[in-house]
Image (tube, rainbow, N blue to C red; front, side, top):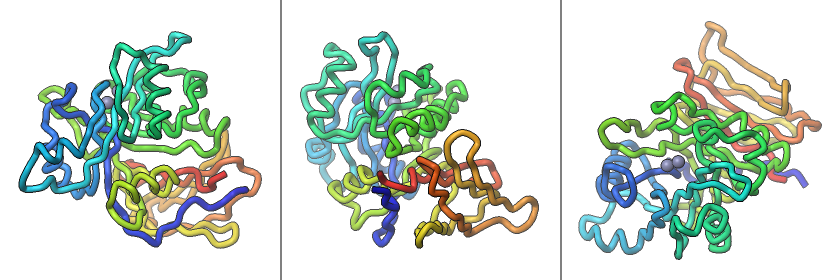
Length: 297
Ligand SMILES: [Zn+2]
Ligand SMILES: [Zn+2]
């Protein structure tokens, strides 16, 4: 059964699902990252070091007083080749134990899943993943935007891979993420993030909302409300020049400012025959935001 995905009676919390610290190849410690991101208006971060599973409970104890100024959540980034030889980077969100690079990608993914982690295909364009690669490991989501890849070689966009995944599974979620490393020569942060609607900024509530897809991803635009009545979706946003309803292949319903006043709201009839639908906004600087697939199926 199709159910409208968004339920936005909670608060909006800003977070990032892909960050590296000095525990792998990042340039900042756990505490420095927390202070930086809290200053950027963030409420939570997942630490996702390469093959180093974070354990925020012990990190927090080591940090001592004052307590870190935002909610840290556990994660890891796996990389390697699967049994077919294709290379992947996968961000796994959740507390996982017993991970080591020597186990290889497929065993690592299986162990993360067994322990309840969400598995997100990271920066597929940068990695060089084909569309077929995206379909082999039943990913929960994909990075629709990866900020550091924009800096490294411009291959930051995962939307084409996302559409391929949605053709097989209309529930695949989209994440915009920084993948920040923050050492000289490896710049960039606060360029892609998620806004989660949850009852509270706790590990349980944020994780449950992410799993349900009750969040959107953004490089700039802010969605202030999103609701559905019957087959009409209505969205309120920060000022943007375009709002688009997006479906498979050529299907799209655009609304635009076209030189007039910028849009701060839009309504669309949701076509019954599109197997998946997302909404995206684009501001005057070309920065986008993406909802998840509007229906949970
Ligand atoms: Zn990576
Ligand atoms: Zn990374």
